[in-house]
Length: 268
Image 1 (cartoon, helix red, strand yellow):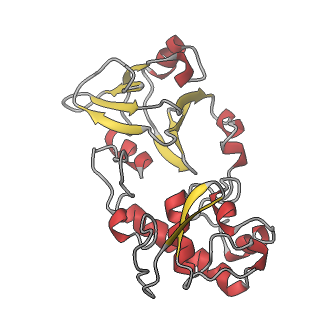
Image 2: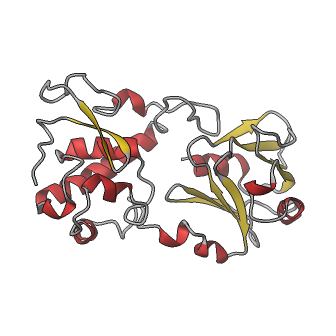
């Protein structure tokens, strides 16, 4: 979603200015960050898991926003600072297009030669995207042979790329599977239910431009709306929308987890 926003604002436009605030924001010297991007056009964007990939032809940008990071469309060039951690100015038809990759306190904007980005520590270990041809019921059947919790596996980016905590809880509720279930105990119907729910819920979330609680905004400054359709996440103590039982919050795979003890019975 954010990668497509960047494309709609800057695709085929040349970079006029580029800078980062701190040396640890990128994997190249700060002066090289500028010299390697200025004069190059953004040919396209893509998403690989939670990573944004920017194609500048002879240079590939790899952006990881982590939790706090955002991409914002600024009114004019702003020198990088603590908030606007990396800033790119693109040529425009009437005025420049300025994008800020802000709050990269844990994230980064790395640069690679084409093809070298595949060796990036995160990209090299990514599992299939939920909308790719490789993500199938058969694939899930294989990875769910493990004895790990089903929630832990769905959060594991090497198993499935790009699914966050919010959506895993919603997917498992829709599939009627308890988050702590050992994946190896799932039957074929449950696995198919998880597959269907994953694609349906993620497609709907993209349609509504994500989920906003605190800091998430798209590149146009708009908030997402999927939080209005959440059925269990953040609903601790509230009645289950299916059976009326109070939603229970626990901790699974190190993350806050929401489930209905009736609709998602724990079966070992």
